[in-house]
Image 1 (tube, one colour):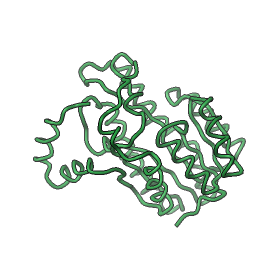
Image 2 (cartoon, rainbow, N blue to C red):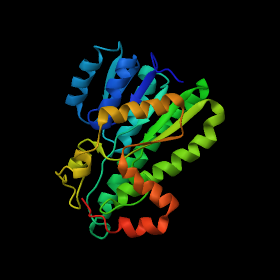
Image 3 (cartoon, one colour):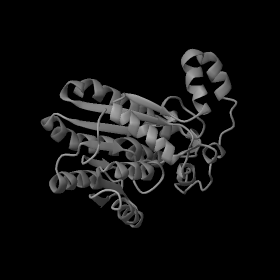
Image 4 (cartoon, one colour):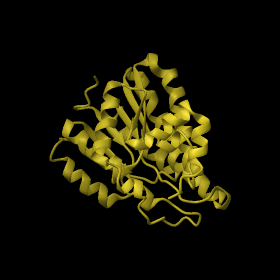
Length: 265
């Protein structure tokens, strides 16, 4: 079991939802935190809260949709704080838009935030982990990373890409003392559906009923961190919604009949 006490951790999407819950759990464990988000005000509030539990918590503000900002942030982290032991690529954005109606600019934005930003950070921080011979990398995918769903075409594509990339990375660096964990949250009670973007780029502004009834972000964070500590390749986090995952795996013909009849939200 990996201990994260006094270990340097960088986590994106830290100001809300699962990211915020992860930060609070890590602070309780005594990790040294670098919390990242584009919302500087919420980051500062979270920092002050974390410093009640851990001795080290710094903030870094950048926008995952801007590659130059992501690269510069990674360089700043390495220069100021040195090798990161645990990188949690958690920041992201969802969508609520039919594939045929979604402008390519929206597709590109989602891929930039939900996939390429993760890869930029990983590529920047990985060499120092390899040089040190230890470290952990985690990436937040989604149940949509296991199968597609209505109005989530590019979001699902990005989450599928997360699986392909980080599964490959795990194989390539396992012998170098670095673990890779992919988390697949299902219906978690966060504002991700509220903040999801529609075809015009504006927020969806509606809480999905399944999310409103879903697992708490705090409980999700506990499962996520447990998987990281154990060095697990992947972890499915949620409730009965994962019936669909198992249905696709073992009875694909039934899955495709059922999934097409589920009302999009």
